[in-house]
Image (cartoon, rainbow, N blue to C red; front, side, top):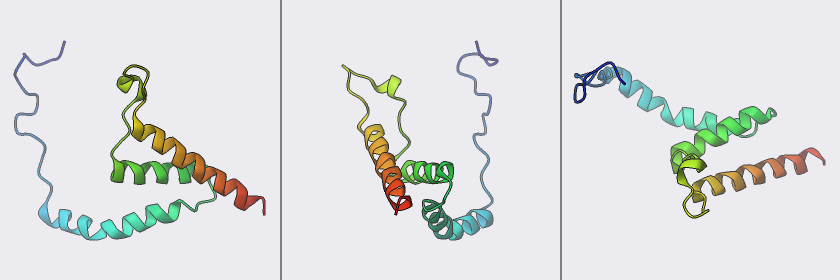
Length: 100
C-alpha cells in the first residue's frame, strides 16, 4: 500500500517547470550531444559502444519493452529483435576490422 489515500497525489503540483532559458540552452546543445553519441559508436571500449548504441536506439526507436512483458503466444517484441540484430552486426563488424 502507498502512503497516500486512493485518488490523492503525492505531487499535486506536478513536475516542476524547467527554467525556459535553461531549456533553450539545452535544446541548442542537442545537435552536439547527438554527434557525440554517434562518435562514441567508434569507441575502442565495447561497453561505451553498446551504451551509445542503446541510447541512440532508445531515442529514435523508443525504449525496448521487457520481453517478459510482451510475450504473446511465444512472439517477442520486434523492436527488441531489431536491436539485438543491430548490436550483433555492429560487434561483428568491429571484430572483422580488428582482425585486419
